[in-house]
Amino acid sequence: MKILKNIINVVLILIIDICVYNVYIKSTEYKKADKSYEQIRVEKEEENLYDKYEDYRGWIKIDNTNINYPIVQGKDNSFYLDKDINKNYLSSGSIFMNYLNHGFNDENTVLFGHHMRNKTMFAQLKKYKEKEFFYGDNDIVIEVENDKVLKYKVFSAYVTDSKDNYIKTNFDDKDQYKEFLEDIKNKSQYKSDIDVNENDKIITLSTCSYEFNDARMVVHGKLLK
Image 1 (cartoon, rainbow, N blue to C red):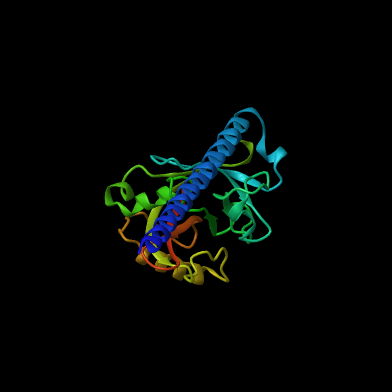
Image 2 (image 1 turned 120 degrees about the vertical axis):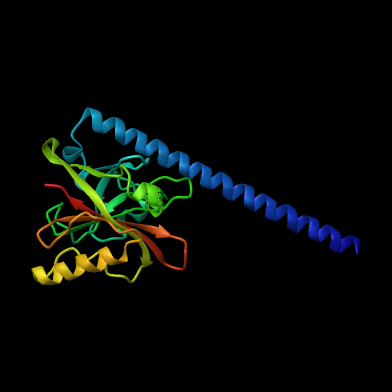
């Protein structure tokens, strides 16, 4: 009986040690990511990021959130899942553009980012689940080359499955695009009075959600002219 009790105590101690270690590793990774992005924010004020980083595509900010990050684009939609703008390993990865996009010139520009548990990267997209926030001051602002600013008004936000084809970037014709727009408007948790039609360009933001396996939080915004 005493031997069994000792074994149980050893197992419990090992479990506690593993948990503490995992917390330490996570904390270290979060600090590394914070340091990396603080550094790039300083660089942004001092130099042209387009000249320094070949994969840099712009900078995203969202009103009343902590989303304030560089946008990169890789050779596929996996490369920047675990890399920073310097292409070094970073568990939180980067905010990255669909590799099929051509800058912000397509009908649907798609950006991906992790939902980090310390509420960084695209974690605060979940605020669009709140009615007050959805209808409030939540514009998506993208800074691109030559000090140009693109502003998007959010018209749809919802949780969907990862197999949902909301990341389609271009369409065969206006009718197909119109059908796509109607579909994503109808999926929205809250209805918007923002008029979006086949002559508009939109932005789509995507991150993981946890309502069910492979759930995605998706936000769509219309480019203001």
